Length: 190
Image 1 (cartoon, helix red, strand yellow):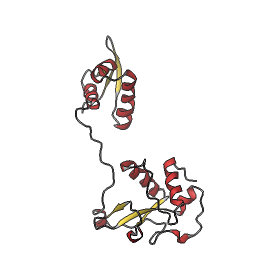
Image 2 (spheres, helix red, strand yellow; image 1 turned 120 degrees about the vertical axis):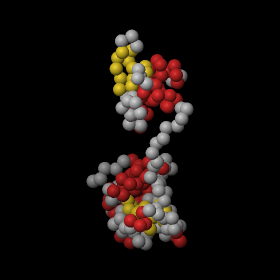
Image 3 (cartoon, helix red, strand yellow; image 1 turned 90 degrees about the vertical axis):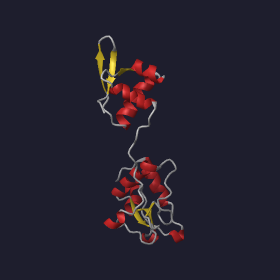
Image 4 (cartoon, one colour; image 1 turned 45 degrees about the vertical axis):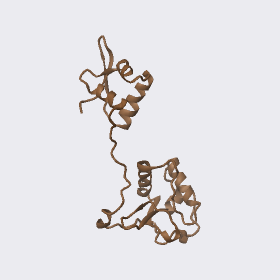
């Protein structure tokens, strides 16, 4: 049985409750890059498929071509089985829906509206930028120095170093104990 995240199970459960098995709209908490990532994983696992949307019936769309034709998301038989539902009828899917992916020619892929997330860009003049600059300096920075520059509490700084810098931005934060200064943290130069 396919292991599902809570979000994937929620999407498939909502689709199963609709006669046409359309998985849209997605939960309100799922937007932008996160939505693209979750949907992409579900399509790769065969839980969802992209099919042409029928605008005349008011079917919601996941993405569109520049000419206005849309693609919607439909739960597959495998997706329904993953949440323990056996489909009653194979004809409940929208027109054009099958359990095979939609074929998109190489020429059409250039006209698709992009939904992929954009690369993360650091904002200028923020405390995050200040801390990164301090850590990239040859001498690095201590927790006390960062606290003075940002007015953050020590536990906030430690969380920022491990969460925002290491996990979210994938920066290699290192530390060493310096005689007379204490533990200093460093980032490699940009």
